[in-house]
Structures are given as C-alpha cells and as structure tokens.
Length: 270
Image (cartoon, rainbow, N blue to C red):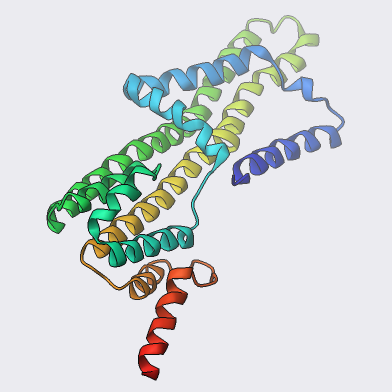
C-alpha cells in the first residue's frame, strides 16, 4: 500500500486547520452545513450530468484504489516472466497451461493460456493490446471524472457565495448581523476551492498515475509473454525487460538468472 494520497490530503487539511487556529478562529467557523451541502452535492451532481451513470459508478468504484495505491514493482514482474521463460524452456510451452491456472492476474493468465493453445504471435499481440487498451480506458475515465469535479467545484462555490450575498443584501437594515453573514457567504467559495485542490484534483491525478503504472506493468507482461512464446533465452529476456524500466531500482538477480549465468560459465570453461 502506498499511503501518499492519505498523507498528502491529511497534511493539506492539517495545514488549513493550523492556519485557522493561528489566526485565533475555530474550525467550526468554516464547517457550515449549508455551503458544504451545496458545494459537495452540486459538484458531484454536475459531474454525473456531464457523463453517464456508468462513468460515475466506475469512478466511485475506483475511488478506494486511489487511497490503497497498490502497485507491483517492475522487478517483481520481470522475475515472474523470467521464471515462466525458464519453465517453458525446460518443459515446453504446454507446461504454461498449468502455470496459468495458478496465476491470479487475468491478463497474464489469458496470455499463458493462449500460448499453450498455440495462438499465433501476431494474433496474441493484438488480443493483449486490445485488453490493455480497454483497461486503460476504464481507469482514465475514472481519473477524468474526478479531475472534472475539480474544475466544477470552485465555480459551484462562487454560486453559493452569490446566493448568500443576495441574502445579505436583503438584510441591510440589520448592520449588526452583516459581518457574520458576509463571512458565512464566503465559506462556499472556500469549500469550492478546498474540495477542488485538496480532494478532487489530487484523487484524479492519483488515479491517472496508478493507471500509468498499470499500463507499464501490463506492457511488461505482454512483451515478456510474447518473448516466451518466441523462445527467448531467460537471461536475455530479463535484461531486455529491465531495459524497458531503466528507472527501476537494482535488485539481486533471480534464481533463473543465476542458473543461466552458471550454465554459461560452464560452457565457456568446457
């Protein structure tokens, strides 16, 4: 779990609370139900109105992943592919069907099952690229939904402020109440800006980043599976996949890599 989103949002709201306290006010001065209901309720409503019901449902289904942030290190993916390449090299491609049954990842399982079934390499690439594109489209739509909410929220906050100021103008004959009423009027604008920049935009950007990482993972799996089908040597395959993620931290060589290096040394000695 990557807690970046939770930490960032907590620090953002903590900074706002600290500012309110330092200025001698209280958090209750901004926790006003009426403007908060308008800002959050209307923002989500117009976000739904700008798309489809399925878009909104898929976006809220993806919301927990923005906070859990579960990602797979590229090196773990590479090690998994190298082990599968070693298995295919020693027992044949048909042995990958048994490996597929034990794999939870549906993308990799589909690839291995098709390899075991003898699917043509070009056809398998097309199939995997289509699945990758579909998965990317769903996750990008979820990200776009929350980014869109971040665009609507400040404007909705201004609408709330205008409504409240209209009420203020209706009570100009009560000067004693004008100060608190004007202050309360700007709370809607505050929550519009806060919700956009502390919640919606960070969540949308987080989902986009997670989508990018998932695309990288699936791309590694696709290229690795196709290379396994083509009979690539495990050690060279591992080096090729590592070259696709140069930013990945170095890690100890896998057992398959060590075995290949040992075989190569013996061959050179002979």
